[in-house]
Image (cartoon, rainbow, N blue to C red; front, side, top):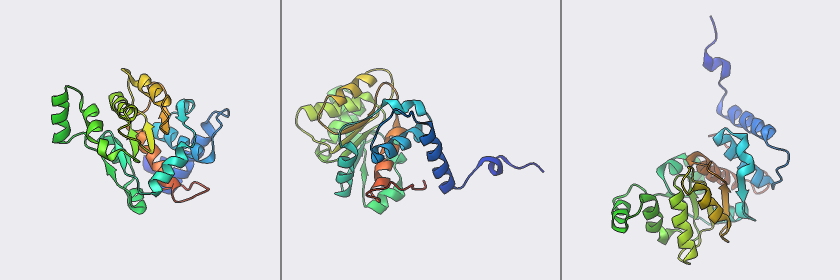
Length: 223
């Protein structure tokens, strides 16, 4: 009797985690020079996207990972632009760290605000979240307009996030929104160009949550 596909290819969660990260590390360009923590975050992004080619487009502002970790260790809220990013963040990791996420993209208040202001729900949601953005870790993994709205709030001096994970995906204003992010003083982790998405943004948050448990050496969390 022939073996099943599961028997032939499937591994246990810990084995999958170790093997996938080993394969990611082996696939990274040798020219990339990052700190150990930045390298760990990069590996998690590449793993989530299944695309080693994205590695050269990932950008970290100085001390971005450390500042993000400090914020999370202080109990900072994690703000997401869409539910897909929020749902991709590990619930066991959040619970073990005593942290919470917030997303309002699909609330009646945001829908009403978008209609009232003649804008998109992505823009309206970031404006609605303004009272919660100071000191927060903000993960944008969908609409470039959400990142642009966030940067407008930063420019106006209304908000000051601890870290912006700017990874919207798409064609219209996507690359431009990330280029604008790199011009600001706000700490950021981003993927330049058109690539990115909810999986990359959630993977970045999960990597930071994972790093919280080990001050020096990143540990691998089974997902």
